[in-house]
Image (cartoon, rainbow, N blue to C red; front, side, top):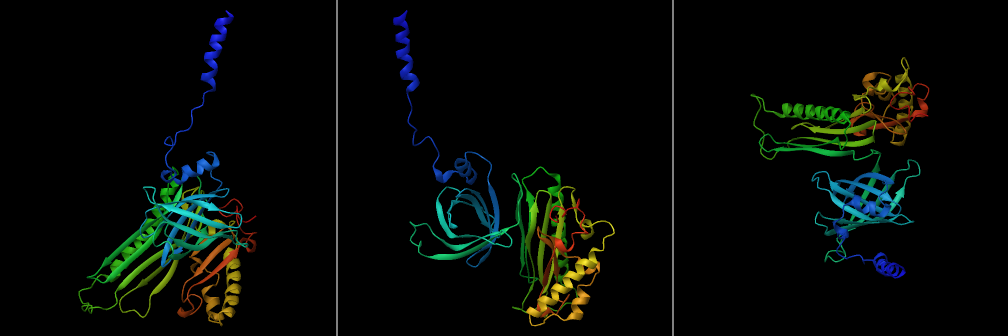
Length: 384
């Protein structure tokens, strides 16, 4: 019996103690892993610690957008150019001094470039910016040529797989001599049905602008032929995300239109503030308690701030125009946006000053409106 036991023990020990060395080919090459797979490897599969969205420029291209996920000193993500839309994978590091190194890879896993810059945090806003140089990989013959880049964090804090993506409308008509270059945001990646309500509101507004422009440039029966080589008409629309989170989105649109023969382009602003919790576009009154004299309070703050700005700009804004264009009427406050720090008010050219002064902007802090803000309303979470 003892002999049989010893034989079994000898057979068992080698098998249980045997370790198979890891095969070099058992795991996919690092260059083929997605950014999320890289992050999961670093963080042990834990949820991403910090996701940030950036917007900025590289060289003369002003439409760079980047998403970075930070886990300790590791960075993963992607970037793309709005006019192209193809995402390029990124992974790299940021050290204790803020030095950023990001390698980029094409869909096949081949390294195509490297970003080197400095991670900086604005003391006032807590927002991150990164600036430095982009270059080809070290093994490329043009690796010594550098292109400057600069990106700043956008106030986007969507969770899960939700994203704010850029859509475009680009048209060029040589016969009618016009060009259209429009960019607008759309929400994706969530089962929230109110995402599509936001998308429809934005698309509807943009499509109306494009249709109105086309109608305006359409030739009339009594129009004279347009001279060869003369300047044509154009419409351009860009946007800035002021806030994007699971329950609330605020987007500012900057629009410019020029019609053939006009003295100068016409610039104007528009904003869409959308309650994703209740699926509706917000009115300014929705932010305040019923019956609150919010227009008077906002107007008083804006008038005082615009006068201060005017002094800093060689008094380009005169007091009477400020009083008229920033007075306490709903018409003066149609272009507004929500930020975490306050309500942003846009004043278009001519509204509070001459065309040469350009558009004006005032951020009204929640502290100036605290007693009037509805604590259970959309911005109650910020006015505490």
